Image 1 (cartoon, rainbow, N blue to C red):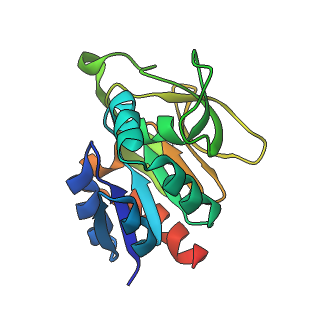
Image 2 (image 1 turned 30 degrees about the horizontal axis):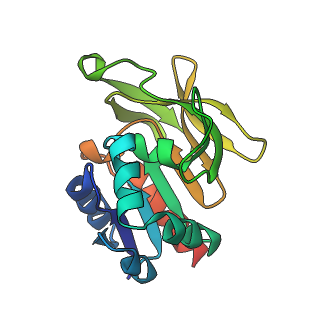
Image 3 (image 1 turned 45 degrees about the vertical axis):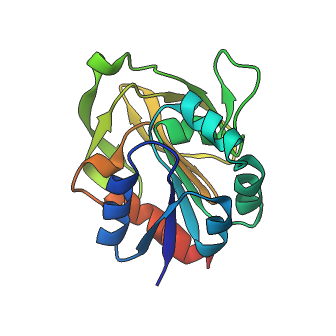
Length: 191
């Protein structure tokens, strides 16, 4: 059985595990970097990117996460996870993991009170996927090898580059598991 980890430092961890299991894979909460060896793919969940980065540094995850990516294992960043995966961040001179060749703007849809849901057309998923946007970032620019999977009101909200998948919204907060299934399929293909 495929084993997919969810970085368990902060964020919507249990909801991702539920979604992974609904897609027929085993979900593992990754709390130590040694656990990265046990999983075939990794979801970096939404949460608060600054806090998550602090915890990544505190628990020495940065090197192991980059090694995980270098080994060709798929990674999926949702909301704050997208910010952590991005190569460039608007208004910041340094990125976090810098793996997905996109430029991301944080909180670009507004503050917590501006949270909303929107029906999205997502390549490889469908045209009636409801995205939950909470203090969501968006992708301002993509590198040439990056496939844009979805836009909302002209803003890029989902993209893929090889083994990396990123989205602005929280796919785990609905009972529609098709976005997670897309990632599970990426993990299957990588093995």
